[in-house]
Image 1 (spheres, rainbow, N blue to C red):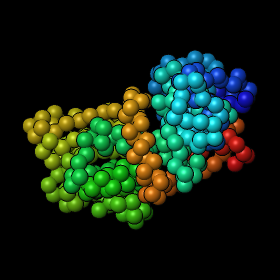
Image 2 (image 1 turned 90 degrees about the vertical axis):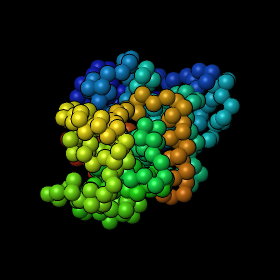
Image 3 (image 1 turned 120 degrees about the vertical axis):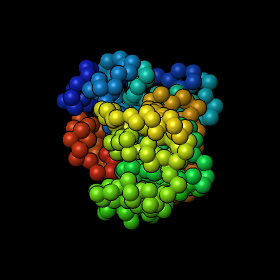
Image 4 (image 1 turned 90 degrees about the horizontal axis):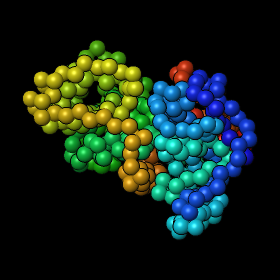
Amino acid sequence: MRAAYIEQLGSPDVIRYGDQPTPEPGPTDVLVDVTAVSVNHVDTFVRSGAWRTPLTFPFVIGRDLTGTVAAVGTGVHRFRPGDRVWCNSLGHDGRQGAAAERVVVPVDRLYRLPESADPYETVALAHPAATAYLGLFTHGRLRSGETVVVVGAGGNVGSALVVMAAAAGARVVAVASARDAAYCRGLGADHVVDYRDPDVPGRIRAAAPAGADLYLDASGTNDLETAVDLLAGRGRIVLLAGLRSRPVLPVGPLYLRDRSIHGFAISHATAEELAEAASAVNRLVADGRLRPRAVERLHLSDAAEAHRRLEEGKVHGKLVLSVTDGA
């Protein structure tokens, strides 16, 4: 079978496209014919070694896929050949990646693709939407009626945060570019603050005078001095982006009002947490409330170019690698 893989850590130039052995599913695995694979920043971190995780060479890159079940292990009863499926947790922690014509997925990390879902749009949502769910609910403990501030609301994770928070009955203050204001309101934001405004904190306070119950920065800027001051009593900050950011931590205001900061990476989510997130993603995809803003399709053989463009900041929306056609 054909795959995008690496034989050492390094720049996008280490990515190869060629033949690799077809994997064999174990008793609790599912063999999937892959349709599409998304390209995420975390994929570049694994490939370069910026984020260390157990892997063996040759290593197939990529995390997220949509596809069709080809075969199931003897202990698998939830899926059968022909089922449309998706997964967002391959390519790390000892698991080979998704960027191949056929891959093996542990059954507890595989989810049904909604009947009406487009496989290219869904794979583009898999990583950002699951990240948003975990940030809001698993780690942020969001409740209906609370106020949520989302920084970077026009991006992939940010837009999913807005949709999910609004769907849960939260009041959403989105921080984004002025050109994204209408888009964010269409996703469910109650207020939109232009991130270029000379007084962003003042604009947020005006929109949320009682303070933010939950604050998430999908842009990775992580200005904690500002964020902590904007929280309500017992407000929470959830850190989910900004691998290289080193913000100042205002300890006094943080503990004097019972405020808290919690960081998480989706790579550490349990299979049960990911399955819960997948159920929420499927519901929102099925009813049309969650869709990617823009999807650009390349072929699997263009994986190195996709990584290169992502690292250079030349991607708007999501890059998706098509396995089944020339895109």
